[in-house]
Length: 244
Ligand code: FES
Image (cartoon, rainbow, N blue to C red; front, side):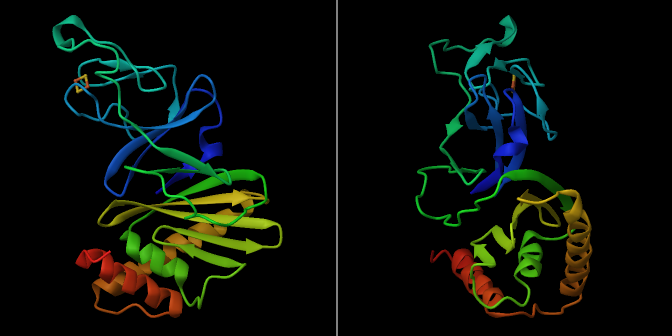
């Protein structure tokens, strides 16, 4: 699953917590510069170690009872009253998940890392990311991004289920949909090869359009669009029926 742009955690200690597909995880760049993805679940009582805001730190300290972990997720210490029963090395580390970085984007898996699922060579330097919170269901956001598109091609490509890549000359926009709650979605617009500022109006327009479509759905208006939209709904039907 896509998690973030590598440039969002550019410096050692930078971290970015997210809930993706129901998984609470944190992407972090460790002291050696390696990107890691950790389950954001304390090994003491499974509470979230990191809150919701990104930041920079030298170690993680769980807010609940003070267990601490290094940037690789290794257990460091705990206050004596809540010290772990098993203090053997590795027994209390945060769970590290498989990570793959492709074209400046960070992906993680909850099991094995797939290969070949993300094909485009973005071919441009990372410029920055626009974060847009939208009051809509994640499927409405994908519907809007797919809009009247026919098929994936060089200028517009969709990667089931949560990512769209658009190209216009040297500019490449990677739209990453992050489902949060039933009616709350975060959209990362990762900009490669162009000015971030110039894309902000477009991100605002996407927010307005998605929130309008969400109201239309609530009013009973069915989705309308091109072949990619139909493909999306077929894939959803299969996913929710458990047949894929
Ligand atoms: S749940 Fe994290 S220290 Fe207790």
